[in-house]
Image 1 (cartoon, rainbow, N blue to C red):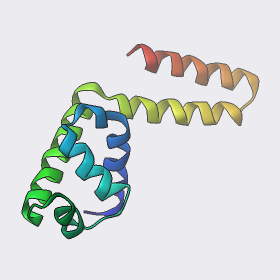
Image 2 (image 1 turned 90 degrees about the vertical axis):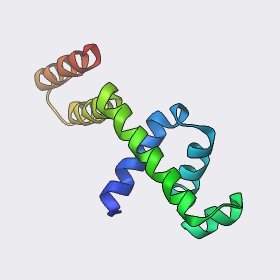
Image 3 (image 1 turned 45 degrees about the vertical axis):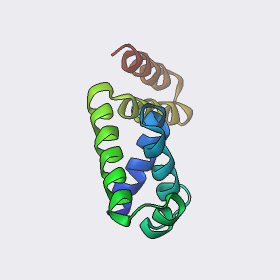
Image 4 (image 1 turned 180 degrees about the horizontal axis):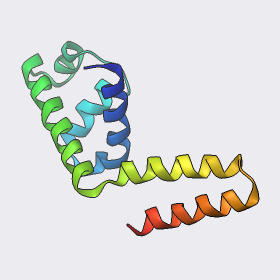
Length: 107
């Protein structure tokens, strides 16, 4: 996995993690947030590395499916960007950015 993909998946995990199975949550937390290897995770659960790999793959697929259907992360990213730009703009331009934020939240 490339670094950008890992960052993206870690952010999706923060948004949608509660929608995964308990095991997927634990494995993905250990992998993305605790930086544990497949072997370390496998040892912790008493399973093989392939089982950990499969669990990560299933969790990844579920996160991507959820984002594809719900677009929560995408909308949050847009809102953050627009809110940041409001802080750096003149009053009229900030009003335009705030209107766009409202539109995103209504999608």
